[in-house]
Every structure is written in C-alpha cells, then in structure tokens.
Image (cartoon, rainbow, N blue to C red):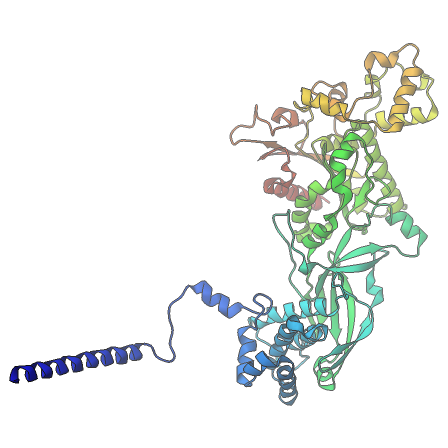
Length: 627
C-alpha cells in the first residue's frame, strides 16, 4: 500500500510538470505572437498591397480604405455602399478635407463597378477633378503623392464610363444634363473643337478598353483626359471633300482626348449642380491643357487607335488578291492614303510596301516612329498601295501621278515647305518604285520595248498616253530623300526560279495594260516591239536578275539633290558578302551613290526590325536637321 501511494504521488507530480510545461510553451508563444507585429514576406507582395486600387484589383486602395475606417464607414460601405457614400459626401461638405475627396472618387468608382452605374462613374470624375484641381489657394497634394496618378486615372476612366453610350461602344460627347448621386451635371460641348484640319471628328471609341495585339510596344502618353479614337467625317464644304476625302479611308481613326472642365468644382459639389464643358484635343496637335494656371499633359493612346483602324480593315485582303490583280477597295479614291489629314509644314513620309504585301506591314515602324516627339511634330505618314503583280513601271507611274496630284491639290500656290521635302521609303519591290521617283529615264525604258520612237508607231491615243506615262520618267521634284529597305536592285534570286514563274503566271494584268499591249503588237507591222518583248511582264519577271528593265533602272543615277540610304538584311552574323535575307542577296541589295548603308541581321521582312527602325529614325532626324 505504501509503495502504491508513492507511485500515485509521483504520477501526480509528473502530470503537474507536464501541465506546467504546456502552460509555459503557451505563454512563450503568446509572448512571441503579439497582437500587433510583422513578418517578413516578398517585397513584391508588400508593394502590390500598397499600390492596389479599384483599377487594378476592383477593391479600394489603402488611402480610400483608411478613410472608411477613419469615418467608421467600412462595414457600412460593404453592406450599404450608397448610404455610406452619401454620409461620406455630407462629412466632406462639413469638413472639406482633401483625403475625403480622393476617397469619394475611388469609392464612387468601386460602387459604379458593382452596379451603381453611370451617375457614380461621373461622380468619380467630378471628385477626382476637385482633388486634382482644387483651385488657387486651396490645399493641394504633394507632387510625389501616389494618389495624384490614381486620381487622374479615375478622372479619365470615370469620364469614359460615365459618358458611354448605352451599348458602351462609343463615348457620347454631346451637350446634355446627366444625373449625379448628389445632384446633376449640366454638360456643355465645345463643338468647334470637333473640327480638325477641315474635318469633323465623330464616333469616339474608348481605346483604353482595347487590348492591342501584333505590335511589340503599346505607346500611351500619360496625362489627363479620356483617350479616344475618332472617325474622320466629312464637312459640308466641296473643296474640303475634293482635297481630303480622296486620301482618307473610312475606317481610319485619329487618336484624340476628351477633357471636361468643371467650373468652380468644389462649390458646385456643395450646390449639387455641377457645370462642365467637354472639349476635344488631337494627338500630334495638342499636348497639354491649362488648368488653374498650370500646364497639364493630355493623355493619348496612339498605338491603340492605329490598331483599331487596322482591325477588320480590307487592307489585309489586298496582299495576295492584289498580287493576282484583283482590285481591293479600301475606301480611298486613289492609291495614296494619308494616315492623318495633311497639315501645313509637315513632311510626308511616303511608305511603299513590297510584293504580296500591303501598307499594314509598316505598322510596327509607324508605331515606333510616332512615339518619337520630334518626328511626330514634323512628319506625317502617307502610304501607297498597289497591285504588286503589275509591271513595276506601271505601279511607279501611279505613285508619281498620285504624288503630283496631292501636291497640286493640297498646295496649289506652292507655299507649303513640308510638301517639298518628301521622303519616300520602299521595301523590296517598293524600293524599286521609290527609286523611280528620283530618276530621269529619257527613252531608256522604251528602248527595252521597241527600236522605233513611240511617235512613229500607229498607236491608239490612250495606248500611246499610257506607254508615255509608264516608260518615260522624270524625277518628282518634291521628293528629296529615298530609303531603300531590302531592295533587289540587282534582282531577286527567287524571282528567277520556278517558284517565280508560277507566281508570275497567277498575275492578271489590268485591262488598260492588256489593251495597250495588244494595241502595240497589232500596230507594229515590222514587229519592232516583238523583237524586244514577247508580252507585258509582271513584277516578278521585272525582278528576275538580268531583266532588261532591272538592268536599265540599276544603270540610271539618282537625281542630283536627292539623298539616298540603304538598309540591307542578311540572315547571319559575320561578313555580309555571299549572304541573303531569304529573298534578296546582299550584293543585289547594294547600290552605288547612297549616303549610308546599314546591314541588319534579319529575314526579308526587316522593316519591322528594331535596328532597321532605329536607322530610319536616324535618317529622318538627319533630314529634319538638313534644312
């Protein structure tokens, strides 16, 4: 019994020790895990937490959540957001603190996303404007306050969503009265700002809601305002239609920005009656808006506007169809298209695409060049589209006539300095067409057709006029610089192969060329033409090494006063000699008399390569400084 009692006491003691140990561990753990503390995490997690907002996560940012907690409205906002916003609005009226304005802007956007609708999007924009532009002498945020950029984005997005059409496809910029959660917005519209270069801008697409594909970089000019893509519409002016509608396709869109100026916004919020006026600004023309004596940058989305223009455009259809000779209508009345209406003093950069291609293949280069402020301020892009299976001389004739007509219609009194400093850049076959803008051929091309002067042949007047225009070239005096990109001056080795023969056989000649060719052969009884020419050649035959046309063009010098440059592609590193780009050999792409020659490691489609684009930028800046 004594032994059993002793064992029981030992067990009780052991149990007490275990309990003490457990209690000690718990107390120690409690001492380590304090109610307030920290733990080490990835710095990116902390940054995401600090910078998250309704525009990135759908939830309020830290400053907006803090104001809800400070006002004891956090739970109420989760359950009854409308009443919480109304109470926060009333508190702002009693004590107009800057932090409350910001919170009202973001929280209104949060509730708008959750079903509050357009009145709350507009309220978000109004509150954000009051936060950003409080008026002279009022409290303003610190320049490094992160809320500034978020408030600008809330203003921009609030306008876009608050002024959207019922289907959300476009932004409505008409004058009207709109409801706000605390009153109403009387919106005026500055219609004069909707007219740009004698055109009316209309159908405003919110490009901030568009995802861009197919381009390496999306360029966005950050600032204030709702970025849009506007359709260029006609005006009731016969001369304007004659001069401009010729070159503007219907799907072309102009990057612009809508800015709504709210009058005496803080007092307007208190009155519940906000007065605003919407004004339109165009990229490349306007850069900033003045508010409270400050120059505020405007926001533009040029890449998204260009990509929207190319979406579902028929220009893609012309690549193979155009090569085969099928006419593709893209809306312009000629073969020359302007990406924007011409502005006096701007230098045209005329882009000529290659075989089985289209102007859309310049998109990467245009996107990058437009991102350069100096180039954007002094150049405008024109593109030439043509059926790439046609004889090269015929396509060059079309471009020459289009350029001459453009100069005559746009500047009949020859007072525009920009139009007399054109730069023509051609890729592949387009480079041969570009060179023909800067040579005087005399009868060199005609001698490839006939030993007899054209005047001595008994040709139909229309046939004679066509042959004269297509075979007798004079340099276009307005063209002052050429850029050759992967151009087969000596021909393409692919054109001379069986593949080239098959491709050439697919080409259908335009009816006027076919008629002129038949007329030439029928009215040449001594067969002067047949000794030189079996049939009208396609562009593929024109680019076969040793082709008489190609030999003649290569021998013709570029006109004095015209500066030329070459960009040549080869596939591998090392010496470029005996290399090629898959279509054109290095030696064939070389030409004498150029001011510079840049070799780029690339396939034949080098026009979108970063090194080629950098070289073009250098050349264009050189051209600009050469004035």
